[in-house]
Each structure stands twice: as structure tokens, then as C-alpha cells.
Picture 1 (cartoon, rainbow, N blue to C red):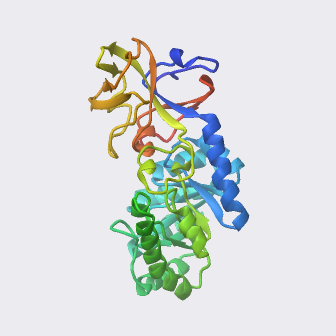
Picture 2 (cartoon, rainbow, N blue to C red; picture 1 turned 90 degrees about the vertical axis):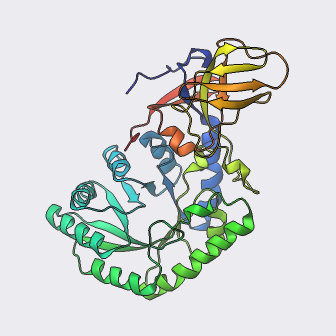
Length: 356
């Protein structure tokens, strides 16, 4: 890991760039907004740690009422558990005896669950828990698009039978997360995607006699919550936010808390160049958004070129905040998150699960 880019008490001009900034006031307001709206309904919040990959931010989500964290990779789950997060759902599948053994190992340190969609996965997990003497929760994943999951009641029943037959496995319920629905632009499209998920998952839940259904993300959780079907939601981006969510017809009601800080290293009347390019900000969901009066017109490995729309260009050395198009992969480019309040560094957090 590189050295932290800032120290507590630093002004923005002293932060080593490029750096990842988290507006702590906005982060805390986002926590309060979602948890305050959802928890009184009786629906649990299991915040998704893939967004920030940072145990300390996860601990703050749990302190605000989350029952635990989701991880999207085995490596993330290992980092979270070994950092003291007591309840982690690996909201994905794993394949191979080696990964099953690693998962069974952390199941001896915390409450851990994982998703399955194939009997071979169940067999590998059963063998690993038998070897380690641990107990692992299992959720059967319902297909909601073109990624993982099963589509029929018969498949669900076969998986449930195999899970029940394994002493080290416990069937916890269903995973029904419509990931592809989060960024559908029109609310009617998002509602249709959730309705299709419910139509598929409902018969499985009833056939298996399970009550727990988890899923729902930042872009759709009010729709799932309103159905009365989901018992737990898994939002991740809500505490950070990004430019892509702002393109939905009804953007999620959260403040933009995450920025990439760059510094002007070349200034001209028509453009400025920042020291923050592809290695600092993800562009899989489009270029970052710049402050008013500046427009990104080119990114390369180490540079962002911003056109000056009018007025004097920012001076050489000026700090410029960019809003990333997609928060999750942007975080994964950084070793540290610099927490700021009012333009002053208040905390620095390690992105401990970066790259895993």
C-alpha cells in the first residue's frame, strides 16, 4: 500500500493527489436517510461492502442498524470477518474445494452465509464444513437476469434437499437480487424487473417453506420494500453515490458523498489537465462529472483533460473534485479513503479489501 495521502487536519490543498474523498457529513446523512426509512418497517438492512471495501465504514453501517455486511467475493468476506465484522453474507457463488475450505474456515470465526445455484457447490461446501467443523448458512439464488441463479421450483427443491442432508449447512432462505435493474432509467422498467423477480421467487419460497428473502439495491429498494416479500435489503452505493445513479428518472434520495480529488498540473485558457486519469477513476459507466464550468473531454492513464466553458481557468495546483461514474470500481483503484468535513481532513480509512 502507498502511504496515506493525507493526515487529519490537512486542508484539501495538502492532500496528495489523486485521492479518494468521502464527505463524512453526506455519508452520515445517507446512512440516516436509508436506515431511518427502512428499519422502522421491520425490513433488515445488510449493507453491501463491495461498494466501499472498507471494514471501518462497514462498522459504521452496523452501528447505524445494519445486521451485517454483504461481500461479493471470498476475499472481501475474509477481510471483513478478520476485521471483526460478525455477520457476513457472501452474496455470490464460489466454486472449487479450495475456496470452499477458505469459506468454511471463516465460518468458524463469524456468522457466514453464501449463495448456491448448483448441487456441486453444495457438495463442496458440505465437505469443507465437515472437515473444519464449522457451520455455514446457505441461500439459494434466484436468477434475475443473465448472471447466477436458478429458475425453477424443481431446481430449488433439489438444492434444498442437498443442503438439509449436510450437517454443516443451514438453509437460510433465498437470494433474489435484481442487479441489472438498479440502473434501468425508467421507474416502470425497474418495477417490471422486480415484479418478474417476485413472480419467479414467490413459488420457490412457498415450496421450500422459508421466510427469509434477501436482495434489493440502492436503485430499487423502495420497490422491493413495498411488496412485503423481501425481508432484507442489500444496498451498497447509497452511502457513496455516483454519477450513473443520477441518470435514473427518480435518482435515489442520497447525497453525493464520494469524489476523486485531482490537482491542476497544467492550465490553459481553454482547458486544464488534472493528475487523475483511468488509474484513479473508473469509466465503465462513463466519464466522471466535473464542477460547473468544466467538462471532461479526455482521460488517459494519468490525466483528465477538462474543457473550460467560460471564465478564467483554475490555477495551477488547484484541487478539483470529480464525481465518478461508478463508485464501486473507483474505490477499488485506491488504497485509502480520505474522510473530509468542511474541506478539512477528519479521518483516513484503509480500503483493506482492495483487489480481492
